[in-house]
Length: 81
Image (cartoon, rainbow, N blue to C red; front, side, top):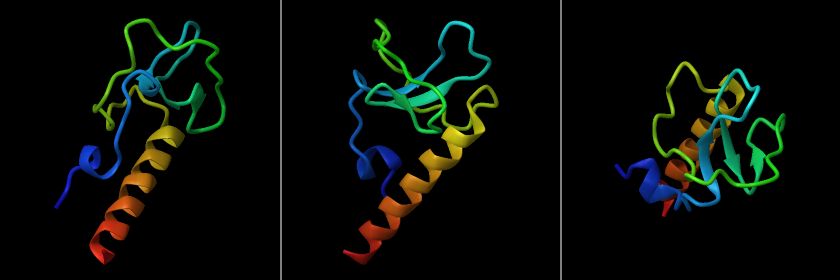
């Protein structure tokens, strides 16, 4: 079985987990928008986004669910091919 990195190519400069000033949880961002839809980031973090660590309790639950659903859907498509 392929890992989520093999199924979904990730650009660390534009996508991944990060925390923003004043936020309580880490959010998963893609193209400056959190997967949960609740937070917009105007600039990318200078240190880049964190990859992996998808099951951390400090992560936004809605972002974790959407990320897991994307990985599951990509795996299902990969098995059909």
